[in-house]
Length: 330
Image (tube, rainbow, N blue to C red; front, side, top):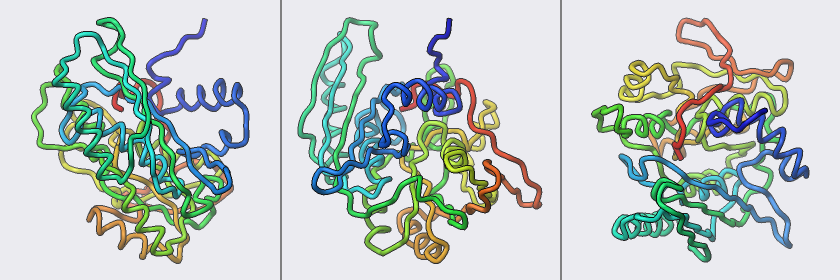
């Protein structure tokens, strides 16, 4: 008898099989099949709608907490389809015994991050479950945004597109690893968790011809690139020396045997742009993060895959993440 495993939530191959198979087959419709971070809906004018649930452990980590990540996650999903996020819902599942002072701290973090992102919390729900039924607090946020730039969708990715990365990768996943008690690692590394609304609006308002965007959360950069390659049967080529990694992330990965490209990010995104706009896009990204870079391009529609070339000119295909990478990261 088949059962749900932790790997089904890890952002890799098993999660894609669950979503694209059982879930999409059950709720079969064209909006779902577009596989965007947010649903693009037409209700007189075009809006984007997204929902996400957050179960991160620990609930507080270097650079953020579950409240901050709950706002950023939904705001960023809306931004990835060219939407200006406006309104969020916030639903809380609270464990019996949670300290009121700890809840207040999380709520204040939600409010601060929402203010930073220019969104309002306009509805929600609260449930309390017996001790042991959840880990202190789980949060669901849903969001609505106004589409201000049409057709930033995965189905619009084209051969020749340049692929850019908004910063270094693996920070959030590495921070969660370092924060977990059993690892007892010491590091000043902070999660990249932040709203991406302003940088995306800057790209749009500058006239950069964006084909598609994706924030590299569960499964990291590797999951995003393989999803893009497999969606339309494209071959993507990326350059290892162009992908920024902090020394701390490299050290944690070497120590524990993780692949940095698979680690989650919560404020770093991948974008594909028309070749004529690659430098303009890079200049805008680097205003927000000096480590932003042009990491590759869509080279062919003959073979689906992600080809990584190193500094010596040799290449290897990057397989999508598999198995249980790191549970409870967001």
